[in-house]
Image (cartoon, rainbow over all chains, first blue to last red):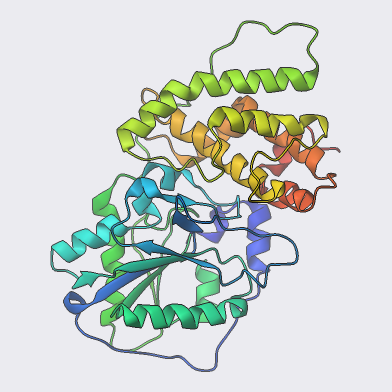
Length: 160
Length: 231
C-alpha cells in the first residue's frame, strides 16, 4: 500500500532496507465460485475487542509474542473494536472515522447480503505483525486450523 | 508496499495506492470500499498465479472546502509563578477540557470511539502523561500492566481523543489525515507535551520506557519537528 515515493524519506529508507523472504515454491489453490465463498478477514492492524488484552511489545519478548493474535466475532459492534498496534508510522484517523477503512466487516456483510459472496466467517482475526514473519509460523498454522473449522475457504489478509 | 509484495510473491495480492493506515481507501465511502474489496475478491477467480494486480483508482480527494481545524481558543493567563512544566500541564488539561464537548459529540454521532485502550479517562490521560514532564515516574494507575505499556496506550488514546474531537467541529469532518496530523503536532499543547516527554523518557530507568519513548511515541515523519530535540 502507498506509493514508496510518497512515503516520508525516513520511512522510505527503512522500508527499502526491509528484508523480504522469498520462496522456491508458489502454492496455488482453486476453490468454488465467489458466490459460494465463506470469507474471513485477517488484519495486521493490531485490532482487538475493547475488553481484550492490548498488543504489547517489550524488549526481549518480541519473538515470544510475534504470533499473538486476537479473535474478532463476526457480530462485533463497531464501538467494540479498538487498535493497539505499536507503530506510530501509519494514519489512524481513517479507522477512527470509519472502521471499514481498516476492517471492512460491514462491507463483507453487505456483499454476503447481495449474494456476491456466500457468507461471512463466524470469527475473524487480528495480529500486529511488525516482526520477522518466520516467528509467526506456528500461529499461522493455528489460524489455518481454526479457519478450516469455521468452513472458511477465502481469507482477506488486510495489512495496514 | 508493492516492492515487498513483488519479492515475496504471495498467491494473490492487490496493491492499493492509498496511504498507510487506510487499506480500503477512504472513510465514509462505502461504494469505494466495496470496489476495493470486489477487486481483491475477484483475484480468487484467477486461473493461475501468483498474481499481483494494481488497484486502478486513487483515493478520492478531500473536498476543497476542508480547512485547517481551529486551534483551541486562548485561555485566561496562567499564574506567573508556575514552572514551565506546570504551565504545560495546566494548558494540556485546559485543552482536553476544551475538546471534551466535541469528543462527546463525535462519539454520539458515530456511535463509537477508538479511545479506551488505556482504560483511563481523557483527563486522567492528560494528568498521567503530564506527570512525566519533570523526569519523575508517576504511580502506575493500573496494577495489571507495566507502566511503560500503559504510557504507550495512553499516548495513543490522547492522539485519538484529539483527532476524533476536532473532526466533529464545523466543516472538519472531511479534513485529510495530513492536515489533522499537522494540527496535532504543530498547533496543540498535547503535541508539544509529547515531544517534551519523549526527550525526558528516553533517559528513564523504568524498564521499557526508553524504547517506548524513542520508537513508539512520535511518528518518524515528525521527529525532526520536536522543539526539544538537542542539536
